[in-house]
Image (cartoon, rainbow, N blue to C red; front, side, top):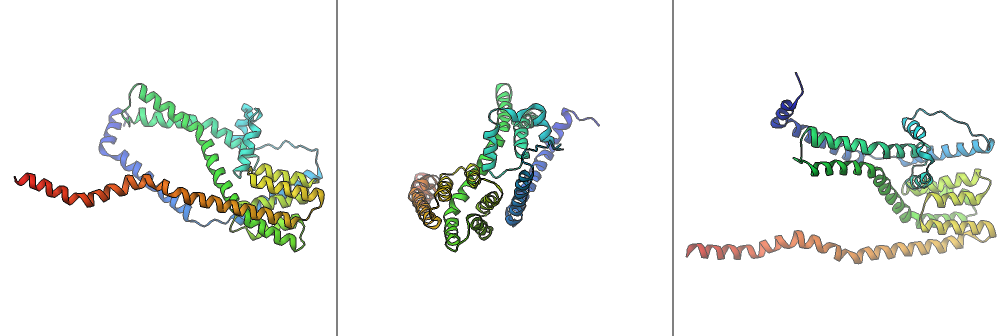
Length: 324
């Protein structure tokens, strides 16, 4: 049995394509709801990440000048190394963006660059399958060509949009939980703990409520223990988290390490300042709420209100005209 235009037309007429598309959408929706409701354990992931970073620093300390060329089986790494995509000038900037999004492994850059290379072809192939083979959309000529080019362009920008969304959510969570972490850090400093021990303790206490911030603090604690220069470990924290609040904390900690000033008073001032900034932003959002609600009010509530109030009068006038 051949698969030709008649078969496609029969499938479209029978509605099998619509049923299959509806089933696919329902399956994806169920999966999305399932992954949204499943409880995740961020502590185990953070422990594995910290242990891996600790092992890397320990290996670097035992053999600082040894650079072993480890062969990898990753397809993405093979593609990137084959095409030399990681040697351009923007590779370091992309690596910093991936670190800000929480992807710190060596393969993260390879996967991102491979996705940037492959996704336009996949999206373009999907556009050809939908618009040309299946004939959905009923586009011809220039509109079809523009749709195909738009799908390829969307595939090119999709990894960048994905990373930007993850980075913005992660930085928002770090910004929100930083004042609480500084309060706990002040308590640990006043109790007599050193900086690395205090960061480790705060990371353990905030592992459930703020896993992103706990992960960063735990990594900084490990680097403070293993790196020979403590300022380098604090600078790595500022590089991983591009937030002005983190920059201020890192500057305060570096000055404390350099000049021997008391740690607790400086952190208490920073915590109070950041908490005040958080309250100011919440008040700004509350003040902006009436302007934001204006458009939904006009678009959805006022038409229904007009129908309820003016509907009986309009019906009465219409009846009077009909009865004359």
